[in-house]
Length: 401
Image (cartoon, helix red, strand yellow):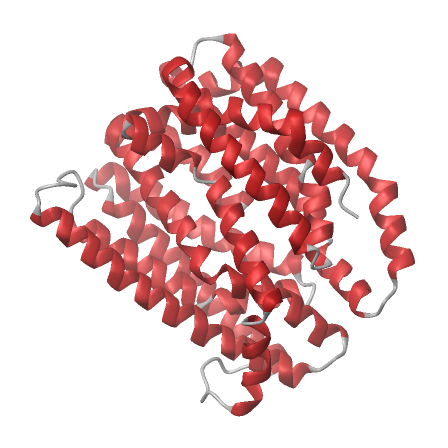
């Protein structure tokens, strides 16, 4: 994910120069919607990594492979249903002469990318469950490299938004071929197979109360990341594009920082499954303060150098007011420090506490965004984040036991 967003940063000047502000904003809104659609299957997406990690730590490789196959059924069926819904909504709007700035071919390519991506999600989750994150990240980098290379080569020639989605599809297919081949080589996992009774146990587990909690928390996490879509709905694609320009670099810095605790999640799951919690406690407490210090240094760095970096990145499209970069830097600090307790709590299935805090964060962030938009435009979600973290969220996340 970090490599993908970093690539989008590199490509943004190209998007702006060739497609313009409105088309750039439209790309960001469409990709934001696609990222959000996982909410309907978040109960499964969050839980499958936990289940895979448990099977791997116990060397139960047959059930590991059966869970991967179950994932392919669930994710692909869900993606198919959402794709049909997207098509219906799109053509209904077209009938009433809305969404005239979006071509039918763009939606069809978007759906194809969506289907290919979801069909292979469980195989990508296998790399987390097996604690192969480094290899998984390298394969993700290859996918992103293919996407970037095709975009840089073809977009200036054809000057069409569809080139971006064709490049995304090519990258997703490349990743699918590599992950599938590797799992077949290492585990003799052959992908699709007939659904059988042995998969029902895990399937029923995902529909348990624990599964619902994964759904609630996963949905809240996605809603909290919908800033660009919300801003786009309120102010239009151009305003959404301006938000992306201001927030994209701190967002990438936050995701890079978040990789530190998230990379530990499979290890935490294995420790939890083996009840080796004394090692977990040392890992959590010894490193937390160092992580917070790292987040603080990174945030101050962006406050002081953000304007220079963004102007270097997009030139005259960058915001000119210094205080906007200070706001983004403070928002980055609060966003990043919460990743440490969230990752540790999520790996231990402490979902009820996470759901409560995230729900309060979402409600008040949305309220602040609506109230502040008239005065602060596309900065309103960031100011809302700072306010709710200052008065409640930051302390609550750090206090999760």
